[in-house]
Length: 255
Image 1 (spheres, rainbow, N blue to C red):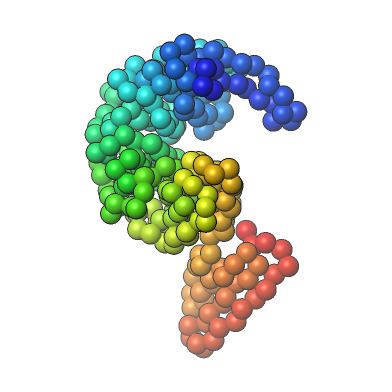
Image 2 (image 1 turned 180 degrees about the vertical axis):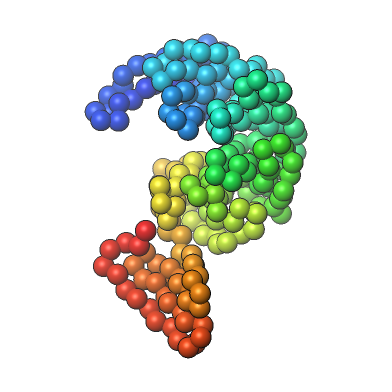
C-alpha cells in the first residue's frame, strides 16, 4: 500500500485478516510469497527488503539498498532475488551475496523460474535480459519501442511473457521471440500471471483492462507424428510418413 502497509486477505472469504505496517518512510511497492507459501518478502520505496511469516510477523531485514526495490521474487531453497536501481541482488542462506549491474536504467520487472533456474529481467532501458543463477548474462534483447514493465515465466520454464506499452510478447527460454500481440488502448502491462497449465497468460494493464491470451502453435512430436495446437479447441495432426494432415476439433478447451 502507499502508506507502507500490506494486507493479508482470506482466499475463502475475501476479508482482510490482518494489516501490517511494514514501512514508515514510503510505500511498500513489491512483495512475493516463497514457493512453499510460508514466507513473504517485501520491498519498499526506502530500499529496505524484509521477510515476514505467513501471519505477518517480521522475521528479518534482509538488505537496505540505496534505491527503491521495485521487484522481488524467490528461487529454489528460499534464495531471494530483488532489484534496486540498475542492480540485481541474490541473497541466499549461508552463502555469499551475489550482486551485479543488470541494466543501464532502473529495473522494473524480474522473475526467477524454479524449474530451469533462469532469471529474466526488464527495465527502463527498454530491454529484457536472461541470466543464470550466478548473474551471467545468457541473452539480451534489442531495444523495444517502450519500457519493459512486466515479466513472468511459464510454470514449466519453457517460455516467458514480456509486457510493455500496448504490447505482449512470448519468448522461449533462450530469449528469442515466439509471438507478439499488439494490444489496443490498454496502456502498459503492469503485471503478468500464467495459468497453472501454462496455456493462458493474463496481464493487468494501466488502462484498467485485464488482457487474457492463449498460447497457440505449441507442438509435440512422437515418432513420425507431429501435433500442433491451433487454438483452444483445435489441434492439427501431421503424419510425416504419409504426408497427411488432419484438423481435430474438441468441445472443451485443450490443456
